[in-house]
Structures are given as C-alpha cells and as structure tokens.
Amino acid sequence: MQSKTRIPFKVDSPISRHRASTRRGFTLVEMIAVLSTLLLLGIAATTMLANVADIGLQHRRAMEERSAVLRFAETFRDDVGGSIDVVLLDDAWLLRVVQPNEVVEYGWNRSSRELTRVARLRNDRGEAETISSTDLFPLTDRTDPRVEIEDSRVRVVLREPGRDGAWIVEANR
Image (cartoon, rainbow, N blue to C red; front, top):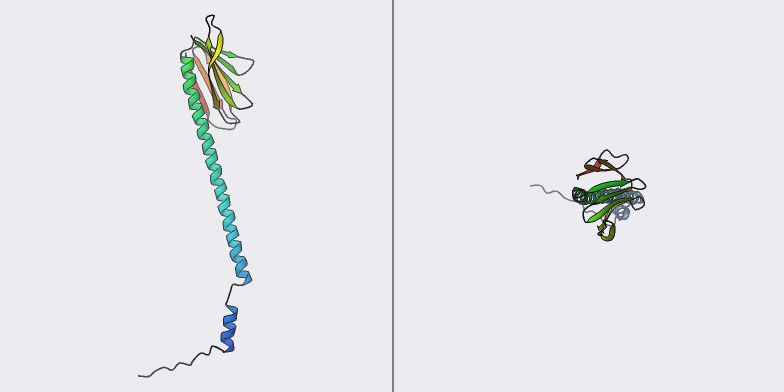
C-alpha cells in the first residue's frame, strides 16, 4: 500500500497571510447591500401594518354605524308602532311621533352627524313637557337621511352619496 505524502502548509507563507487579512470582515458593498435590503423590508412591513390598521379602523366604524342603525330601527319601529300621529316638520329635519303618553321627536344634527331621539311626557292637556329619555345614533360623516310618510307607513332612508346601498327603516302605525 502506498501512502500519500502531504506537503505541510506553512502558516507564515505570504499567501496564507493575504487570505487571512482580506476575509476578516464584510466589504463596504456587502454592508450597503444588506442595509438596503433591510431598509426595503422595513418600509414594506410598515406600509403593510399601516394598511392593516386602516382596514381595522374602517371595519370598526362600519360595525359602529351598523349597531347605531339597528338600535335606531328597533326604537323607531316601537315608537311609530304605538303612535297616534306622525308629523314631519318642514323647517328642519324633525319628525314628531305623538303617542298616548309621550311625544317623541327624531332630529338630524348636521354638525355632529347624529340622529337624536328625545321623548317627552305629555301633561293632562296633551302637551309635551318633561324629558323622559334621550338617545343618540351616530352615523357616518356623509349620511343624508330622508323621511317619507305614506298613510300608515313611515320610512327613513339613510343614504351615503357615492355608496351603492342605503339603510331603509320602515315602520307601520
């Protein structure tokens, strides 16, 4: 059997010193490439996080509006269902629902973008006096409510310009 003889490698040779001195760290180009990649990844992650937060905010606002409209629909149907008379006052968006024991007024506050409900107890003469309850139904900034009264049916349409659908709340007297 033949054995291979190895030539010993000298540690102090000029070639080994050159290799050892050039490979101790990263070059400037490598550092710039890594930092640029990390910067791009950070920008992409920040943009994605901002988009996710915006989507979450839009969803929360939509759920709050839906909740407010559903509360309004239930309260409105109860009020109109037990009413004697329903009158739309033309000077402002004010709907008056007259019931045997109270008068309920629904109004649209343009500045705060809220539907308001104020119930007042009626006195012996049938006039509204003491406030018995109030309620607010916050809607989106661009909501444009309309009221339609037909014989025994009252309809409130809550529409946003530029939006395909609308909330329609109907109640029968």
